[in-house]
Image (cartoon, rainbow, N blue to C red):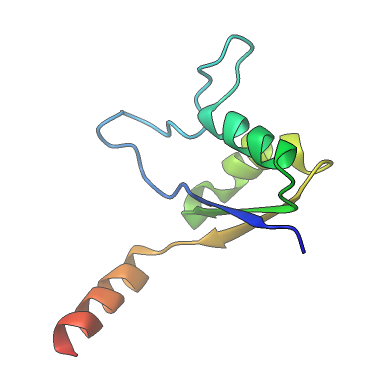
Length: 94
């Protein structure tokens, strides 16, 4: 069984001023995530799961996921602030 790369990419980039996950930074427009997924493919990973906010799922699929769909299984999980607040409240109560 090949390993899965889990990418935590749900941050809003409020200090950065936007979604740094999809902003180009490489010489040919690569993103930081492009380098991470590329390295994972070369290392033998068979799947990547991006944990993102649901409200930018379409942008993420088009700008990041679509680039790799023919080379690695790409999946998404959605992080919701309500889920985090509930988990935090349960930890404090428990």
